[in-house]
Image (cartoon, one colour):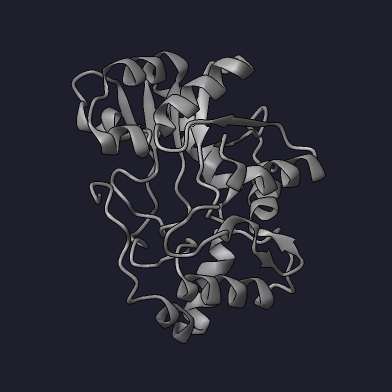
Length: 233
């Protein structure tokens, strides 16, 4: 709820449902995910997220606001997870099939960490990362930099010599598209996309890509938005 650029964004209305509900519903369609868990903070400011989780019956865990790496570790430990899929809650266009593809790469290559963001070939907002509980525990113990604690996974890709890594990539470079929710302009685009699909959430990323090619002006709504840097303080 404490987003600096778009406060309360994950509980804003998106075609009759909250953004968080859309993300959870889309992720529940992934075939290789056993359980979807919301890892929120223990701040009273985030109590509305807990209530929303109870409303649509999704498990949740409350942990540190600033040390998100520890929050992930504690959540994984509480639920007995052997492997963790990380998806941020500001991605209401997250595609369950792409998440499954990242998981499949992770499983096939017997890696410690797999993602579809290194290198980035998919639109921003379709990001998924998968890592073992053992790798998460090592990162929690060894990561010292503040950005490594806040953003959970930098310790993995900043130390490739320590972890077995793998990547899922697209058939072309679509990384210039921005389909995440961080600003008012992002919200305008995502609302427009959902409205084109009658506010359903069962469309896939290729349908959105086709929409963007039919209506190129849509991408202009947020093309100027600069992504917050991992190293920003």
